[in-house]
Amino acid sequence: MEKLFSLFSDTLSKLYLLLPNIIFAFMIDVKVGLGTLHTALPFILLYSFQKMGVFTLNSFGKITNYTKVLRLNLGVALGGVFFAIIGTLFKQQILLDLSGILVGTGLSCLPTLIKKGLLLKSSKLGLVFSILIALLVGVNIKYFSNLFNLYLLALLLLMTLMASFYLPAPKTQMLAQLKLNLRSFVPAGIILCLYVMIRTYRQTALIADFEWMLIFSGIIFLFFLYQDIFRIYEQTYQFWLGALKNFLIIYSLFWFFIRGQVSLIIWSFIILMLSNFLGTLLYHKLAYPNVTIQIGAFLGIVCGLLLMLSSRIYLVGYFITALSAMIAGKANTNDGLLPDKSGQIKTLGSLLQQVCLGLTIELVSLWQLHSPTALLYSNVYHQAMLKDSLPAFIVRLILISLFIISGNLIFSWHLYRLYSAKHNSH
Image (spheres, rainbow, N blue to C red):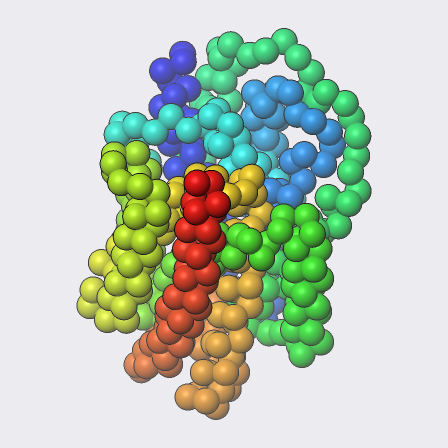
């Protein structure tokens, strides 16, 4: 059973973020119309609660038994998928909304559990299994029903949960001491509200100026808050990497919807899984100093971003960027400068990136198409509605330019800190 748990947990660690988001995104009924939350709300709640969870895991006390936490999270997620199945079969929207909350909450803590070693048992068999599941999901979406994907997700969660009961676990309570830390819930609540507003904008193409003001006010407040807690000014490179990885996923969805190439979404996710697997493997194989690896990885990111400017070799640049970002993240986390708070920092980076993406789409759409929401129509309706993709290319050109310019400045500062720390140690 331990080998089975190793296989299923490895598969889940590769799919826990991508698989539910694909399934819930294609649950949205585009025939309902633009500007409605009716069928988009489950996906919005799923995504928002996923992002919030990384801030709340240790808010109830010191965790002494992560195996029990894993089982609880898998059980919550499985219950959410069950509600999604029932809601889909009987067309009960309230059950679908509840499922988004439960699945998002249940899967939100898995990054922390992966770092604790409970799900990180990477193997070639797990990678092959993950790719097969991703391909099957794409086939179900295109030729059959998305309901089959819910059954598939439920089966994966159930098998991992059942196999986890055969693991040797310490006979301790889940928490050493139950102590609710309200201070930790303040940023988590802000994160949840901000992501709900941003994802609502992405799925409905409607947002008021007042909501943009609220979003920026919340981000500024979070910066001041986390400057004290996580010393964010010293983890700016980690912050930038989080924004970059989120850009690869979110913009690729937007780009393929604009061009009507929905099937390429599955391939982009498979490429992302391959890059994560190869990035981890290469990082442990490279026998170079950590600083050298970081320099090489950053140069790979820049080259990959430049290749992404071409529509013909977009996925090649996507793979190189994702692979280099994975290696850079590994090297940066292990450089020994600070305790690892990468999950929270990357979440803040992805939040700011989505705000920048949304504003860029609005401005370019207003400039090129004389309407601030015209570019989002294709994203919402999942089909190509524009005669050409020049406006979407301009969005990509602006954001990639910003990433390259800001990346050079941030990485130069990061290198200065690395060499300063190395010099002081001698």
